[in-house]
Image (cartoon, rainbow, N blue to C red; front, side):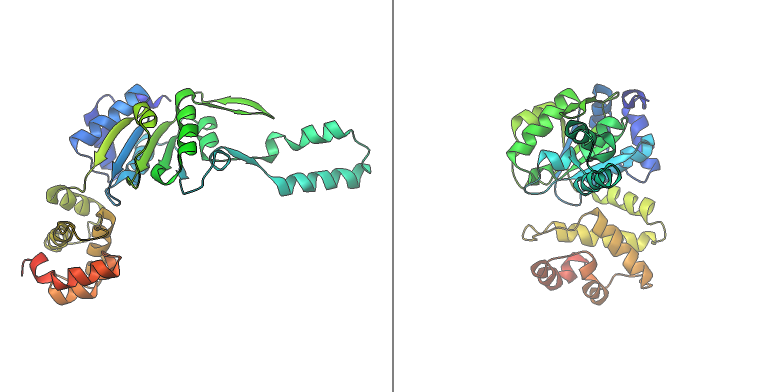
Length: 296
């Protein structure tokens, strides 16, 4: 199956994503559809919690493709993204040969046998190329360094990698690639030029209400609206270190529902604030302004 032909239009893609519970606006649905149609990676930037990672998960579900995730971090290198050799198993293999044959086999033959496919540990990028079609999520690419970016750029340009001991692996069908960045640093222009780009904002009140209704239908409409408006009040404070994302909105709404809350008052909001706000400084600041944020 070629992912480029899965959806006839951006509207079709938006509908398929909605069926998984992911509600994309017109701009996001359009750029995501174009990335599929053109076979180009999609680079998503935005604040944490805006739904960047969830888009890749929804795409994989909508297209019934495996999701392969590469979580980036400081110091990650190509071997951790591509492949490695199972050293303990290689040692056991050598010892088994020694025990069975008394070390009589040719050294070159033994060495070649150590770099057999069965000892290869495929990491996410190699798996995405070999198992294509698949969705490859390169999460938080801004946490990696320049050298890793250069490696990614080469792979995304050729859709192939070379394993010296085994040869070149080329994707039969290029994987669907979604890269996410929280913009802790600027990515290089060369990588951005290779991708289609979208900045993802926190959703507006109406769309976030629709998301809560879809993802947490057990929560009453009245409580959902109070929670969403409270979260938007928190996000509007520019001094907040880590504004709550959609995931925190959903968690807070579900938590209040479990408590049997029908009306989000100041006392209940203060008691459950740790579900939505994860920094002590933020929590103290929000508690002082809860009456205002709840419209009291």
